[in-house]
Image (cartoon, rainbow, N blue to C red; front, top):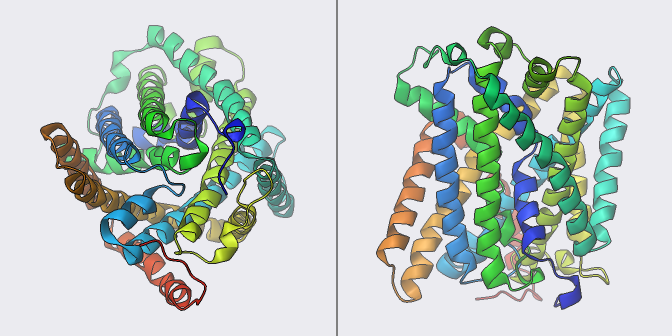
Length: 433
């Protein structure tokens, strides 16, 4: 069903979608996590930001040539056919609702800290309530969800930019020592920080998913992807650099709220509660954006005959009905993993291999980039350089992934085999060649 022009989203709403999907819980905790590597982690952030911008240029180039709803799989479909497209959409769909579960856990975790903690059952009930609430907002229509995303992203970006800028005046260069706090070589340590930092950029491709639901998509899709990624890169780099330069390293290594520590040093008082509130807002904003995305991944795949036809069902306002309901429902068992400590460790493990899975998706899309551009009239030198640089970065970060993570990512692909075999046998399946 075509989306009426009155229900489409514009450039800046799409920019806020990309930025909001990128700036989630990671912006609050990664500065402390990466501090263990020393100040070279700033170099890791810069390297990852450059790599993320290169990847955004790849997706921008692809989105100029195809504006179908669904995102990455649509490019793989055009380049390599239905089977490769199914496994791309399957992996991306699973990755998305697993990531949503992490955002829900983060949002309620921050909220719980404001009120002194909740019991596990109350936390679980709040997590389910949040999933249902965001799903309902999305079911009202793309414009409603888009406006909500725009407002909440603006609300969370202002303090994430203003506080670090003020902090530039308070940097102590001694806090950047040591440069490499690990026993590994500088290259190995930089590689490890780049992989961790890349988690904060998973979602740069989400601007391609709404496709035909965007005003003037061939112009606005590539712009939004690039602008959103650059805004997020700026926030991550300046935030990490200022936190490391202002908060003493010994304190930062054990910090549970790096931004709260930064604000306390700058302004005095107790900033734990305001920063926890901001953390919850960041997670909720990212959850809203990813809920918009995950349902449309399934819709685009169903429209291409890759997913069951049930995912084609849309509401009167053009929202994927069962795509939203089923995707949100899949997140609920994963938020249940946060109810006990040992299962929470398993949950974090799932998030780790999701990063490896995302890199595999990116590598597949880079291959599609070369194939599609070659078919559409050849590659110019600029496009070749962008593609090779993005490929090099993706392979470099993938090196830091363990064999175990690669194995689990492979299992996700294998889990899709029966779905694909069943789907191929459906007599009413209309496969887009």
